[in-house]
Length: 247
Image 1 (tube, rainbow, N blue to C red):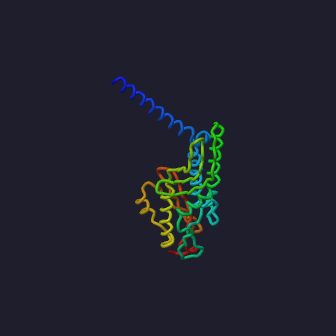
Image 2 (tube, rainbow, N blue to C red):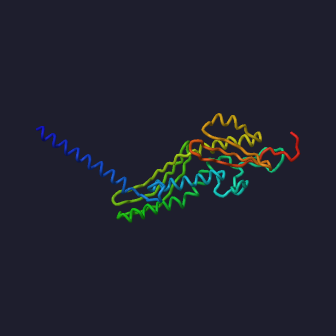
Image 3 (cartoon, rainbow, N blue to C red):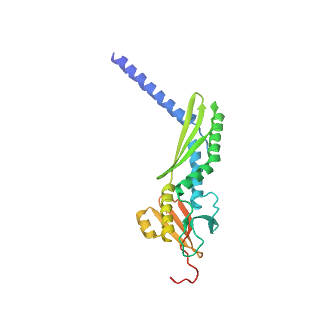
């Protein structure tokens, strides 16, 4: 009897190993993958993450716009005016009331072709490995949250006998937090014409917040994450006095 029980236990152990190995094999090889260039992330998720990271970087340096239409040129970069007045003695008017929503919308636009490219490349890679693949229509949402940017991607896909519907991609990023900080700075600019960065820096010690006063009354703000290195910059022109005015 004991030998029989031992035999059953052995069989169960072997079956468990086979099941675990099968699951690992499926998720490592059957899940849509894209072999990216050296130095970049691997897989469909990784391809999207790489593209998302680059898109966020481009938006951060331009104040939340892909191609700023109303900007200040500084060291070859077009930095968006997020608060502006062309009059003397008056505080600025906020141009983008909800910067986080602006960045979210711009990411939706930038990522459209990039997600499609990552998806089509992963499908072709699977086919080259001998899998039968049926691709579906790709749709997605970009969600900015504290500490992360998420993409919920709907892409009905059949690989062999397995079906996939959704892919969730997460990227660690401080862009939402920096956008909220920038919104606070803009409110001060619109109300008082300037901002006390010492107080702001005390509330957010993990960020380096700076401003540069330019000759025409423009102020360039920079919010840089000390942890991740991301830097959001934007311009404001508020409460400007004419040359020679004696405060």
